[in-house]
Length: 528
Image 1 (tube, rainbow, N blue to C red):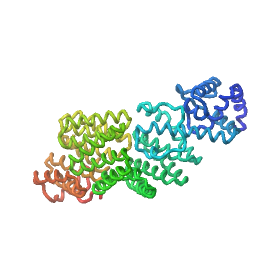
Image 2 (tube, one colour; image 1 turned 90 degrees about the vertical axis):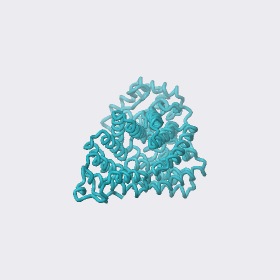
Image 3 (cartoon, rainbow, N blue to C red; image 1 turned 45 degrees about the vertical axis):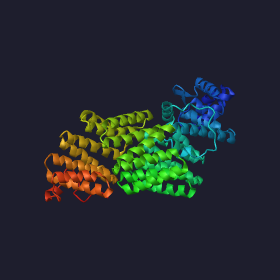
Image 4 (spheres, helix red, strand yellow; image 1 turned 60 degrees about the vertical axis):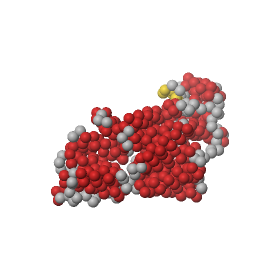
């Protein structure tokens, strides 16, 4: 305590001296806690006592006004009391204090791993054995709702623990804790927090010389970078991770990275590279006997088969992915397989099955608290509702999706929702609104170099102009869309070509057609 606070310290000491030995020791050790709060389980781990004893000691500290209890079962130290506790802890045996801190980190890590499996069951943190043992006393994380509630309640503490572990060279806690939290943070859209954690973890892994820890962290960091639209950074992170996994002969890690990289290739319209990555990922996963990685590879391969028009193969891949996820109790995998299967069913005209699949996916995503998944399922459900003539429901679904994507900062998702809203507006003859939505989507897609969504926006603009009888503008936009679809090998090229031929649109736009509507670029300037 500073000299001017001597009287305050003396007052604290009066309360401290009234404590019995056990609560005194716990109070000193509370000064070691890196996070803002603590519960009885964490206190028991910190102090090396039973849960019953920890609760008794916490109650005594509370009775002596040394602890606040802002909500039932959660305790905090006032800043001045925290400083006092740290000063007292400095007089303890350093080895005992270090052991107390390690026990707390072990508790946080193992409990976070148990809770995080509901959100990222294939995370690298679960594939590498930890030297520490789980705490004998920990809350039950087997139920999804309880796991989600615990992760949210402890989020600030887990972040602080990961930072503490990194600054005190506590490995592998420094990079295993962020990995355990990664799926939950992604599901909730906490992109900035996740990125900061993984950057800290990356520094720690490199400091420790742990190549697998570095590869694991780069893999998770790449996912955050992709979801926030930084595709070059994601590609660089995964390239390095793939190199490290290859050097270590780590097949499941390579399969996971190739899965993620293939998905990014798909988003940017490089379908040939995407298929190659997914097929390689599937082969590696099967060679390693990693069924989680196999399910993920099947799901992503099914997406590519759908996008290239091989609907029977796509449905078969998604059904296999769904069966694997169910066998493994992987709710996350089930949700995404159902979502992707629903899209295939919608594309093949089986609207009843598509709606059922999307509703099931939406329920699972909601149970998981996965807002990004909910946004995707809502957007895809809205398309089914459009095609069955339920325009009011479709508008509500697409608008909800757009709001969620916006809240999450997922720009590609915003472009997808805007394009769907544009298509709906054209169906309902509101072509001016349609062009507004498609123009916004086009700007985002071009900024991200997301060729498939760029082509969809151009196609939507063409249809809106065609409905208004503006044949020159329609031809210009549809021709741009056709060029992109042909370049990436999308079956939508046949649809656009048929539209151009059926309406006998001019092959080359007139001079007035170079004056693009709503901010659209002229033909030939699509982002590559």
